[in-house]
Image (cartoon, rainbow, N blue to C red; front, side, top):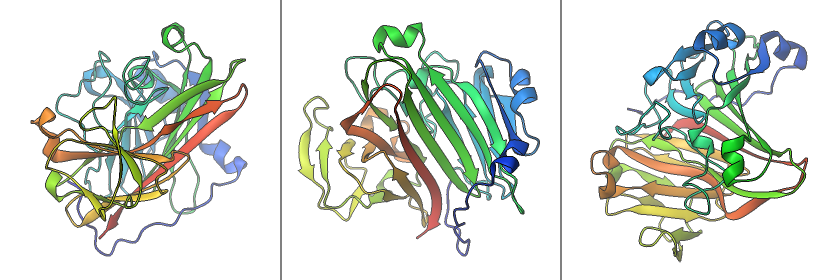
Length: 330
């Protein structure tokens, strides 16, 4: 359980090292996701920083380890971050007890992808990115005077399965980095076809909380939001008048439009998760309440999204969104 860390300073964002230093610690050459864990470790592993291991059900994962003591684990299936631990060992993310890891369905928890569709629509729920194997594009651990930032870049491109439901050529590139105890994500979508395409997307972020009634989200007051709790297909448009969004009295399923780049989730322990995003534009707040009786009290979803207004990308162009997560004391 994530707890307050009194007296622990927030690390400043540092610039990347020059290309010469990066090349010294970067492993690149795309390998198919079907490669064995041993193959991935041999080609992309970086001792002490990036390790490929078998996750649950034998599914390949990559573990990032920072010299500060923080760590993250990413499953290649769905490019899903399932663990982000602080140096203290406290887990920040939440994986539901009904999650499966045998690739029969998307992983329920952590940071799943919603692409190229958020929510229900003409194709399958939340798109296809979360239930496909992504390829390893590269790994790195930037050389620093005092510490390294371990990183993995994962890549997804079209295949027969995706083309049947979404007839477009694309390249999605997802980079996960540990910078001290911060978790950073960078999501890029490139149009590799000869016609424009349109999509919506989100990071369906699950965070562990001390208790759902103790959790609250700040930074959304005054925004217009779509309340989907009663009828997801015909949501009510409302204005958020509360200083903080709270939970526990019923299903919460709200899409906040044109949200600020910074919001915070108070997890109820004296600590909060600060979420700083660019490019995503919207924020989705969700808790299933009694529709998931066995676990709803333990997590809240605060999701960076691009859904109020769809993205259109011309041939050869790209779209990019980033999110930095860090734990702060309240």
